[in-house]
Length: 490
Image (cartoon, rainbow, N blue to C red; front, side):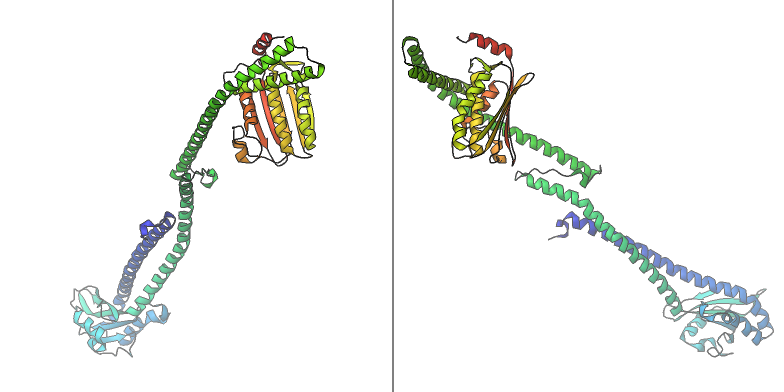
């Protein structure tokens, strides 16, 4: 893998660390060069200060040939603390380049030739000017072990000799190495502080970007996951990326919901067209049977048992007709206004199913004598919901039915303590032929949905571990329903 193909979580700390290292090296190199230059300048200045201080005192000693006086003068800088002295030795030579006096007489014998003191002094002897008007001379031969500064001992244009200040380059390197060592340690301490900060900053900066990348990668698989705004609460480019992702996620969720509703609507429309055609076919023989019963009741003389049977058949077929009418989107259902007697009829009809399973059904009906709602359709909705609740509650289960008239709507609640519904069941609960049970085809709840929708109401299902509840809201439209009620035959 190439360096530039690595993750930014790795590249940013590497780049940041590299820049810090390069900066540290550049600053350290500049400091070292400057320190070396300053050290040389300090040595030269030190030699010049010694020469300017001691040369006037040495002139009378050389003039009067006072060797001991000259020796005391050149030994004075070493008398206090010789270990802290920058220079190695002080040598006074005459105009013939012979040693007059030295701070180290055992190494530099009096009247000895300067060139005879060693290779370094031999090179100095060749370069050192002895003219009366010659100034301060500094010699730094690269191959030599010593560094020399020669200060003329002169007065009124008369030169008697020179004061040579000798520095050992090893001392120079010792001082320089100490400076470099300090600079190195300071640089290492700065790097030890900055590199972890850079690594943390790089990872902290790239973590939000990595999260956004992972979330965007998951979009193709249908996983739309939101990002916690507290992960990056700032308003820079990364923060704007968070906001853009949040906006994109909202739009994708809206689009997915819209597409879902479109698919559901198209599926419901297709099933509606199918059921409408079936309903029309059922209505033809159903109308004939209802006409036959009506004719029999009008012209026949049935006994009481037959009369009761005919009445049950009439109500049952009428219920079928109204249910079939609910399958027709354009159906105009007409029936008598809803009353408390209709709820009692529903209670009688569900008793066999409840008794068969041992299900306890509790009723709570609070409404006026009549409501301006088609009784047949409301009864059908309530009957389907209660029978489903009894089946779901199972043996020795409990079902609660509540109906009450509020200010402008009828509220129906049907609850059971049976097995809870799964999320995928709740999602497609009111679609036909999607039953998740082994019994039925899922038409009961779909018919309830169609009826409630035609009446302008809403139906909603909720399910938890303890309870499953169906809630129906049907608005009261007294004017239209009253007019329909007036059109009903007595």
